[in-house]
Amino acid sequence: MLEWLRKLMAGDQGAEPSQGEVERDEQGRITRVTQTLSLAEDRADGPAHPVLAPDDSLAPRLREACDWLIGQNIRLARDRGLGLERNYDFDQDTGQLTLKFARGRTVAARAQILGSFDPSDRSFLWAWANPSLLPAICEDAERAKAEGERLGLAALTTPTQTVAFDNLKPLLALAAQTGGADGVYRGMVNGTTSVFLSFRLDEPARKPRAAAPVDEAMLEAAHALVTAYDAEMLPIDREHHEHDGEDSILRTLIDRKLAIYHRYWSRTDSYWEPSSLGWPSDHDPAPKAVHFTVPHPQGGALDVAIGRDVGETVYRIEPVDDALKITDQLLDWGGGFIWPRVDG
Image (cartoon, rainbow, N blue to C red; front, top):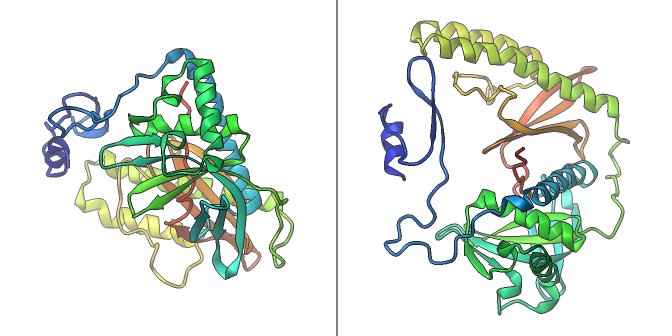
């Protein structure tokens, strides 16, 4: 762990990174730190591979690709239920990607390998430069290389490079869009390395037999339900923050949260009952970069909020006694998606 972060977690409000932006509240406490991590900072001889500076002239093209991938992700979650898969298989010989869901449901797609990212040294290797891969499954990566040569974008033509993960996402979006793919899938190998696949879904989306047609009014109502829930919870977190986290009001504020929770949720257990308060609040819409609602394949809806910097909140909403209620919060949704940031 970074030394300044260790000190901050121990309560040292004077701990700051040597390079980065620090935001403080009225009492001078650190509320947010934004830092671009130095690449391979623990290596005495610096990064093992080239570190490429962003080309501002290509920012509009990358932003377009990011918008495209975000839109594709939402459509795939809506039409195919992607995000709920429990596992995946990829056959390098046939180029078939198979996503495996509950109740034996699968989604198959033709896939190509774009590249792989190793977090141990923050290195990304393009598939076209990987000698262990068959050329037939690297065609989209080759197209990205050709596009990089046309645009003069070294990030698409440098075989192996040291890169921050957030800076890699727009490149993957651009590569998939250039290749004419339907999206990008992130598969984990050995628990750490990410392999990125561009994929194409040949068959039209098919609804599960038991699922009713998409009810747009229900989706709007589910989204409104979650928005209202957050709107009631947020002032309580803010009040606790403004009172400097006083223990004397903690129980009162949690009781207020519990009353709100029981109006919006339908649970017979206490698993998701609020038991603490925090700031920044999980109910604050400001840090949410993407917020959408899609049908759940088994009925009801999923309301998904993707954080601007990190994390997501995914609620399951279902009809209960002729009213919509939140019934669950999914912690393992969407591991195969990547959500590039769209700035400016």
